[in-house]
Length: 368
Ligand SMILES: *Cc1c(COP(=O)(O)O)cnc(C)c1O
Image (cartoon, rainbow, N blue to C red):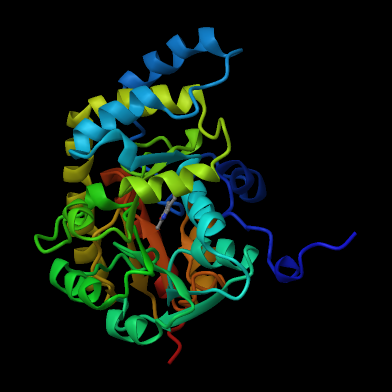
């Protein structure tokens, strides 16, 4: 047997340690997981009833096109239902875009460092990934534009960017869009859109009216708190959505996911509450980081990349022993060996993180 030559080098995805694993390994009772940008407040309480009601239909295939959810979401976003495509997480929408648009030898441009799934899926299709270093933690749109040529098919912009939390402004994005050739698809991954507070963050849905070559990705995994159910979506012009639909598996999202997403969408009060708590969490954590003499990237998401001036792996391990799981920047996919990416938790979780981090920093020497 011979797998595709372009996948031989790909690593199998290494998730962060699970809560159960850490409990077992360190003999701890309570674990705080601030590693995967999950919602510390769970999800809307109305999701439970939706899931229970769906139980009765477990033996039936889902509606492949998610018509009911598409209708409600279209109304919420002020777009038309045929401008939406759903995936098993927005991860799957990334996969479908790569599958629909990339063939061997195509080029695709992305930031270095950003969400690893763009590169992963592009490489599976045999495309050449052109990675453009971030500038002060932010996408360098001019440098990315300079890498676009006749072979370029897709440019990926993660906004706010994971892992840095930084963002590209409306004016910078518009200037970029004015110069990007029509044959290049621009993917705006807005997984953290609902957390954004910056006034000059792009109104990306407005961009769709002017540009045919844009797809926006959003998800129910983050602020909506449905990560386990795997449902995310793409928003675009209906021609592009049709193209992506052509490669979609017939039943790619489950009944449970669709029903839960619909219930979650209808509870915007919960979303407002999470936005408020996240903003308070960012204010608290950044103030505490400053007291500890740590700098960090300003964030628009529900996570903060903080620079610990020590090998991230050591600080990560120290926190782990104290029962707190964060994401170490030393992981090859993250690429910030002296930084941690920490999800903003509940007030109590944030306080415990601060106490544990101070202790870790006291015990681990600064490296220059
Ligand atoms: C979490 C995340 C996603 C995907 O989440 P799904 O659970 O697959 O919807 C996509 N992009 C970024 C930048 C993320 O951080």
